[in-house]
Image (cartoon, rainbow, N blue to C red; front, side, top):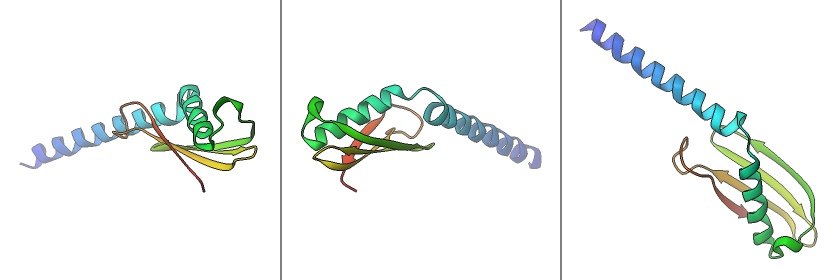
Amino acid sequence: MKSGLRRAFRALTFVLLGLTLWLAWTNVLSDDSAVRAQAEEKARAFAGCNATCRVLDMHGDRGMLSTEVIYTIDKAGVVVVTCRRPQIAFGDHVCVAAKP
């Protein structure tokens, strides 16, 4: 009984370790140019000027669960775009824009 419980705990530990490594790779370490492009497009659409907007400043924060990019857009002010995956580790990023 004890060894079966120990094996199950060991298997769960390896699964959680694998999931953590996958989250770190896909959300933090890999190339995020597609996510940044999607975030910029969402910020420009939210500001209401699309391709004619002039972005004055942009800075962001990448985490294991979400990416947050803050844009300062000429004549529109500050727009915060948060991008997350629907199933934490899998699926395409979905970005939402809002005023801070």
